[in-house]
Length: 137
Image 1 (cartoon, helix red, strand yellow):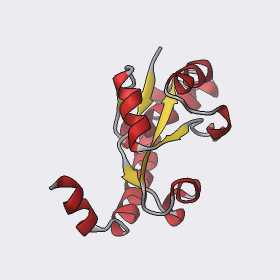
Image 2 (cartoon, helix red, strand yellow):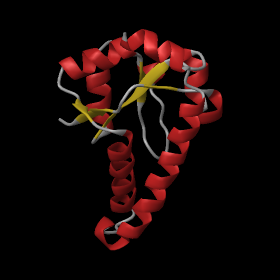
Image 3 (cartoon, one colour):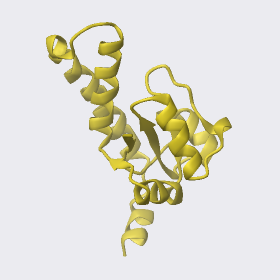
């Protein structure tokens, strides 16, 4: 079973859409995803997630996790990945679902990753550096 969590980061309605509503604008969260839906739901249950919290997103079915749930997931063996790694994995899965060898369309992944990088840059504008300094110190 391979289950993944990306890094915690603040989400805002302008950037993350749904996450701002669930956790309050600017609170940190991350995504829990897996190679299969069965793996995802079984693992989510193990860390106390409700099935109603599942987000059946067409690109990446996932659960949004709070920092505490992320810590529980990592403790139980979830693999930590960057948002870029997770974006690449989703893209490769979509290509495979279409019956396309991802290696033949490698140039397309760069566009996907650039879009994710731009989204992260927008999110960074809304991060309060004072709050970050307090958390680190």
